[in-house]
Length: 576
Image 1 (cartoon, rainbow, N blue to C red):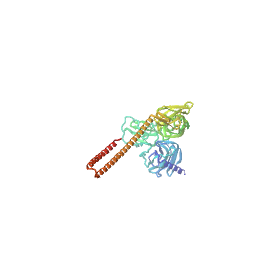
Image 2: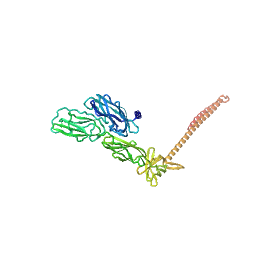
Image 3: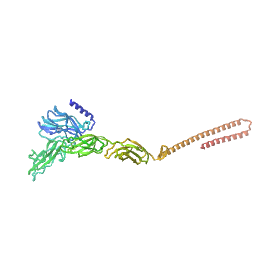
Image 4: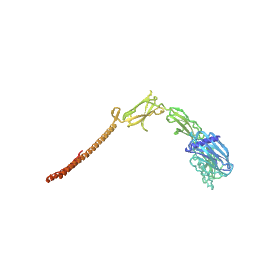
């Protein structure tokens, strides 16, 4: 029932964290990759957290029952100190859920050591399944990205390293020691000290936190006939026996954490030479669990002091990283430090301790910086003309400071401060030349220790153009007067234009009417002349000579009427 319950929990974690960036690797590290039937060997279950901090691992490790037999499972040196599901053996499988109260990080975190025995020949594929690695983020985020299984060849007496096991982000080349078969040349002096290298641990001065098959290599000069080699914890060990055969190196399997020395000595026809002692330093365990402490969990002091115990059992303490609200603020080698000034509010402090091998462990705590009392503003100038000063005053904590901020949208136009006297009063005259427009104004308190208050409520300040003319409650500046004049000119011009075109339309209408009347009068006169002409023609009593004279005058009158009609039309068109 317990297993079902926690399986549901971890399945939920997988669903919740499906979109989270994954980074950690769960892998198997066998003591040897090639063994004989009946040989016992260790397989370590490891985690490479890729610099993330983890607090739990769930997994199932399966062995082929026809080749490998599980002899024992050890939690010794495991980074996990409590087990939700103990690592029990069921049908040649190991199922476990382990956790720790403190987040841990490292390239080769020890989870379990499994003692195995080979019982059959062949390739033994050891499988990993149903696995979860949870981040120490308070959410149980699954950060497992890679699972690296392993194969072991059973049935050969030759132990070689055909496959590499990933123990660190970079791939480490595997160089297989080669046997040398040749006749040695004659030497006049004893052999020089061997030049030794260990590809997995290339620097003798450094500590390492990754593990793998340790191969010690050396260069074999042409005069060498024998080589003696051993690996132990004695820095000045003497060598008594030589190797069978002449090789360029030797494999020592996977080393437990600790300090080791590889000792190599050459022999030629003059005898044995000096011994080379090569140092290997391994530390795969996290530093000792600790608790971070703070001078006060709730205080107005913005610079609290934190302290912690910085102990490591093997490689020693290297440094600590301090995070506040997820942001790195300090790297220190001290165990008691003052934090940078913090803003008011609740904060999360995370302390990560690293040893010299790069292993780490963390602790966290919450603390609160209590804000100072917000200053009160008793007077301020909420409306000024350009060039005038802004006056502001109020009360606050005695012998402190008041910071004043004036801004327009997101741009700060003025930032200043003034002292508060011992009676709690403060005032400031702001002579900053501000452009015309609307601004916001706020104040905050600050003491000599750096503690601050929240900002006061935002108040608006209006800046107008300089006043030239006042009409009642209306203040007019040069710009306002200029705009008014422009408006008056525009309005006057519009009225004049309208009047001009109205008059023009009226004159045109009168011209049309006058032309029409002239045409009408001309037509009436013409009609009357035609009637007279008809009567003269029909009257028989009028002498012929008189009729001729009358006709001549009628023709002349018609001509004059036409001229009058044309002249009056032209004059009317010319009139304004």
